[in-house]
Amino acid sequence: MTAETQKLEYQEEKKESILEFLLRRQKGIFHYPLELTICFLSIALSIYHLFVAYAGSLEAHAFRSTHLAFVMILCFLLRPLGRKKWTDPKNAWFAVDLICVLLTLAVQIYTLWDLDAFIFRRGDLDQLDIYAGTVLLILLLEATRRTVGWAMVIIAGFFIIQTALSDHFFGIFYGPPSSWFTMIDYLFMRENGIYSIPLMVMATYIFLFILFGAILVRSGAGRFFINVALSLTGSKVGGPAKASVVSSCLMASVSGSAVANVVTTGSFTIPLMKRIGYRDYFAGAVEACASSGGQIMPPVMGAAAFVIAEFLNLPYL
Image 1: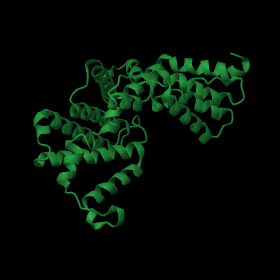
Image 2: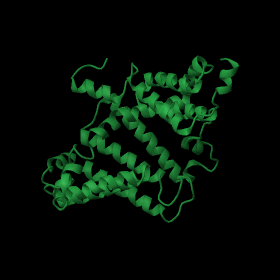
Image 3: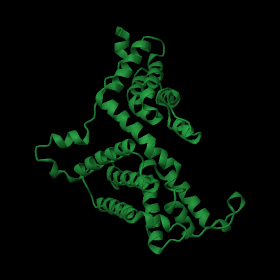
């Protein structure tokens, strides 16, 4: 690297993982039950997806619902109610988080307890199915609120109400209403609602991309891509922005995910661009565009490429 390129090099600030935090505690890991639970669930979720990727997918409803249950439980623990961070001291609202976790676990156990009978009841729900579906829908809206805010919850809530009371609306929202029985059957019992294609793609492809992207970051491979990009473009005009594009292409060749690219390369390139004077929104836009375009970088392309290959019944490679 040139001297000018080295000046632009971003000094990585590694954050301590929960596992590293537990391993260096002198009191023993069992004195930190929340941290131990989060660590165990995260490792279990990763092993679960790696096993499914190796051994083949489970029954669709079982696979997708288990993935969603894992993610929702982690969401309730890592995005607590009444605290800015999950590491802050616990307060009375922590009881609500535990209730959400237990309800999520209860719904998942109810779904998998007799999966064949559960699937067979589609279109002929009993009262417990309606209760379980209603609880899951409320929990999912709460998890959404904690992660992305009220906007998505308001939009989803509006269309749930509109579907149930569409004869009270006007214009394009007017239509025949649907009963709560029909809505729960569609949203909870089948693979057309909550467990539809977006969740399938997330559970089958995107999670693994994010997992391996995180492994690359912790192993230093992400930093290697950044240094290669900086050595090629760092001394040029607009070097950090060009480095963002090059590093995203390199990272995309092994991740295939725009999200994974932003998480890995963006953590270096966005602060680097901001440090030399790029505006926040411009730095974010460059990284977002570069990471999105990187999805068409072979050999590992974006999730859409796998979906297209599956629809066309053609081998990916």
